[in-house]
Amino acid sequence: MVSGQTTKQVLLLNTIRTALDQGDLLLYAQPIRNKEGEGYDEILARLKYDGGIMTPDKFLPLIAQFNLSARF
Image (cartoon, one colour):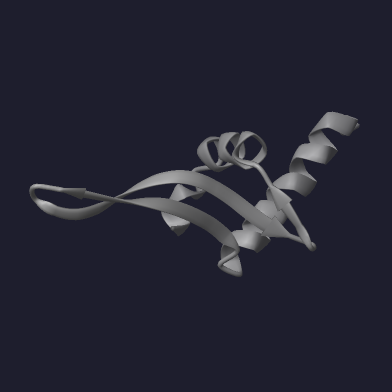
């Protein structure tokens, strides 16, 4: 039998995959100017899903665990 925690994790993983497939990863960056030119420092990442926003503490562990970082 599948535990409730496993079911929740699978549903969350499917939500993350769908959001990544649809390009719903939101990255906000701070422009940084230095001697070498202009660069950016990422300051915020969010994942849009079903009209809501998912914070990194929810989606980054699953992205790492299931090697989904290759998608972006």
